[in-house]
Image (cartoon, rainbow, N blue to C red):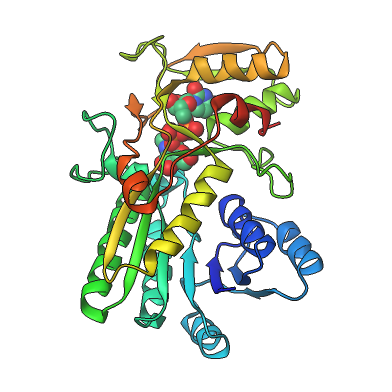
Length: 324
Ligand code: UD1
């Protein structure tokens, strides 16, 4: 049993991690300010895991004292830092908000770490920008396309710096495109909050909430003209976090790993697979490219396989099945 501080415990990814950690018998101290989530998941954890779940409502980017108290009151083994603002479009409109929120919360966590507490940080493939090297390995130079992406790069740099200067250890996990829900269907990928991402938009059409899917761009240099991504089942993504926690026991510095499948899937392929799995037919129409979108982005997952002993297991069909 380990004691894990989870920031962003109410959200889709942080909540799925929290659920799996609690089910596995770990103690979780969850923190969230509900800026992008509701209290529903937290209420469920409190009821279902009375003996190993604790929760503090707090904005980690502002309340360093609250965080200090948490570290004083609980002997934390690991911190998994999911909390952060994550909309590309919003980050372009409100860069100050993104710089303050995403960097301050990360800095406040780092200030409270000691060399016996390991950190796992939620990073993103967005740090690679529009890379001509595909599949993307961790070695390529980072170059973001948006303020959101720049804040992720800056957080990674800050973490690396603290690791060197404070003698702490951390792993940055660069997520590709997480989709679907844990098979227990407790934490679901939200589709009600005006999502930008493809899978929840497909779900909205399947549920009859939206009349059609708008496909952004049909003139990309790809297999069918639509953009390609590396979709990864949320359960595989979460198992990558537990592999990273194990790895923290062996390292003394900062490491970076891609969490992706290594498969490149077009928008139309995802849509067609979804239709096949659910025996549905979905309306769609083509529109111009979405600003800031990249053509192709998929992972070289070899390093995570070699060093974390982790690889994805679920297929595109599984992802579609577990999304509705
Ligand atoms: C987006 C974010 C990225 C973030 C990731 C997390 C942008 C530009 N990038 O990545 O920073 O880390 O989510 O999951 O927002 N699409 C449609 N119709 C839709 C929605 C999407 O055709 O209604 C297309 C997009 O144009 C894109 C593909 O589907 O080509 C995937 O889009 P999305 O799910 O938003 O993921 P990313 O763009 O890869």
